[in-house]
Structures are given as structure tokens and as C-alpha cells.
Length: 407
Image (cartoon, rainbow, N blue to C red; front, side):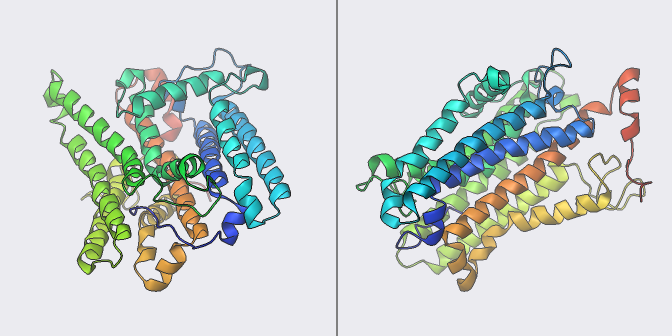
């Protein structure tokens, strides 16, 4: 991640005329719902019980729609609403800059409608009200850095909070939309995005909030381990402290990035400090993704073990080893998108609104891919050791690489 983005083009650019900031925020939020539905669907096909892992109630009968079907229906409903809104917006504005600014109430109304759709019951449309209520309860708990006990859905809290870290810039842009709509002199959310709206501190604070949430969750888990009566079975909690340190590395990136933007003439020393902070955050996070979140052996002495493909692990449920190698490479590349700002040519390109949006989209995509392998890892951790006979039969097809004999 980097410390945010500057207010860029001096006038309303072509991309913003077609796709104003409020619609971009709505798109990325809706994309999260589609992505979660795909996660649930694919993992269901792999016989990985995601509702069990997040302690979500199972369906009472087979006649009820599956969890992924309900999620798809909600995503489709949100998409339909936004599509209708933006088509009307295009018809009314015809990419005229003055009209785009004057009709900013239309995309802001769309954001309000999306928010309402997460709250109102929609049972007649077969859109799960239970799921949305569960999401809102979890958001309330997670928003203050809370984390449930394992039996109450701790893993779901962790997944949601990690997803929020990838939506840090989107949350900041949501604030910018509201701030520009309500508090700027022109009062337009579709004008050139002013990422300094509300002062120089508020936007960086909003971007830091998701990392602060995960930091507090890690410290809570550390405290629980320290308070456990049988520490010999749970360890001393050092891994939770190391995970907390990982999220703490995001704060220097945000602070130094904000300082750079607020300086008229950037200090070379400050710039080098920002680069060093970005490098530490990206490489530490990449290591944690591979070694801790996915339990792969790439960075351990066991990476060359004959029991599993090089750098991976014995049990692979998602796909062939080649997919894991590709995802590792993808994760490293997307963790380092901030490097586009290191050369003058790429820095100029990355400051366009379209490029800012592309970087946000790629981070959301990276997190979507990450979720598949994080849930797979949790399923293996919870399913393989200490199971009863029935469960071992259920998982019997998945011991080892189920694709190793396929062409």
C-alpha cells in the first residue's frame, strides 16, 4: 500500500466525466459482494464448508437457496440499482462537465440506496436478510477492533477485517465523496476529487483505521493466549505479536505519504523513508500471506521436502501446484504496486484518476484471490487433526493433491 493519492488533474478529467468517484466507490463495494459469492461458490464445490468455519447457521432445509446463491442475488440487486442509476446519469449529463457537477446528487443517491439495501429486509426478493444482519453485527464488532471467540465466529471477524484493509482507499474515497457533497464550497461530489477534503489528517486516519482494527484484534488474541490456563498447548502468543507488528508497518507508510503530499518541495530524505516503509510493509505482508496465512513452506526449511511440491504443502484443495505458484507471484506483484511511483514517468501515470482506480481494483482482486487460499488453510487446520471417523471419510478424497493424477 502507499500513503494515499494526491488530488490530481486540475480539471475534471475524461475518466471522471464518465465514471465519477461516487460510482467508482459503489462499483468496488458491489464487487466485494460478487467476490464473496464466488468465494462461497467455488469453495462449496471443493467441499469446503465456509459457513462452518465462520460459525454461520446452516440452512434449515435443502429447499432454501445456498449461501452463495443468496449472495449472488444480493450482488445482482445492487448491480441492477447502480446500473440503472449510472445510465440515467449518462443520459442526463452527456459527459458535459457542468452537468456532471450539477447532477452529483444522482450518484450520491445511489450510494444511499446501496446502504439502505444492506439494512432493509428483502425476503420477497429471495435476498437473505439473515446474512445481511449477520454482516452488520460483525461490522459493528469489528469496527472497534473487536473479535469474537472461536465458537462465535472469530475466523469470520478476521476475514472481514482483512478485507477492510484492502478497502482502505475505497473507504477514504467514500469519505471524500460525502465531504465534497456536504461541506465543500461548490458542494459537488462529482467534481475533481479533493483528497484533502476535511483537512490533511482525516483521510490518512480513515486509511489507517482498518490496519488499526487488525492490530487491536491481534493484541486481543495475544491477551487470550496469555490468559489461557494451558499455555504449553497454545504457546506464548508470539505469532499474534508478530502479526500485530505486520499491521503496524502500514502506519509509517500512511504518515510519511501524507507528509510528502503536504510538502511543496519533497524532501529526499522523507521520500527515501517512505520507500523504505513501503518496502518493509509489502515484503513483510507478502511473507505473512505465504508462510502464515496459507501455510506454504516457501520460506521454511521444509520447502524441499519430498512429501509435497517444492515450497507448497502436502494437502492442496484448490487446484494443481502451478496455480499456487502463480498466486504467490501475483501476490508479490500486487503487494508492490506502490513501486509505480518510483520513476517519474510511472508516477505521472499513476496519479491519473483512472490509474488510481485501477490500483484500487487490483488490490481488491488480490484480496479476493487471497480469501480462497486463506479459507482453504483454515479448513485444513480445523479438519485434518483430531477428527472422528465420519469426518475423516468425508475428507478422505482431499488428503494429498487431488489433482496430481489428472492430465
